Image 1 (tube, helix red, strand yellow):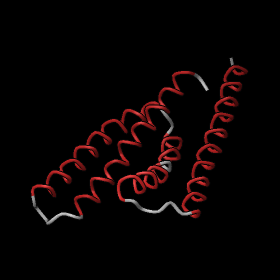
Image 2 (cartoon, rainbow, N blue to C red; image 1 turned 180 degrees about the vertical axis):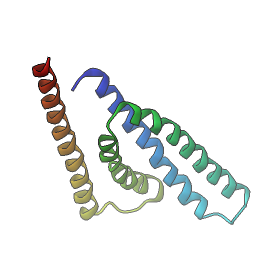
Image 3 (cartoon, one colour; image 1 turned 90 degrees about the vertical axis):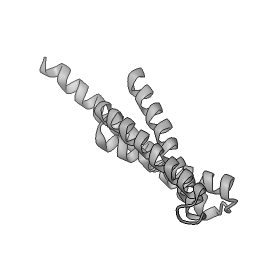
Amino acid sequence: MNRSKLKIIFLLHLLLVVYSLSGILSKKAGGEAFLSPRFCLFYGGVILLLALYALCWQQIIKRLPLTTAFANKAVTVVWGIIWGALFFHESVTPGKVIGAAVVIAGVVLFALSDEKEDEKTAGKEEQDE
């Protein structure tokens, strides 16, 4: 995998962390009285984070295949477990850990197969020249 693609994947994962943070604010807003100042603050934060995410997502998918970007999006499940434990004192059960491991394994397997496909395509293009 070349350096520029690694940089884009790293930025994608940072963006997915931002996206997952909107879930924290959303849950906080849900615990407040409708249209109270705290509700509006949390809900406004959700809208702000999702707007930032939408703009950056468009830039990411210009530079990565859509299938790669969407496969990596599954990592937000892991962030959800982490944020739930840190901010809402939710338990991290063995089932959640196994589920997160399966998600991560799937993303890694997809990335490895995507890299092999890129190598095949590059080799085929060289042969055509």
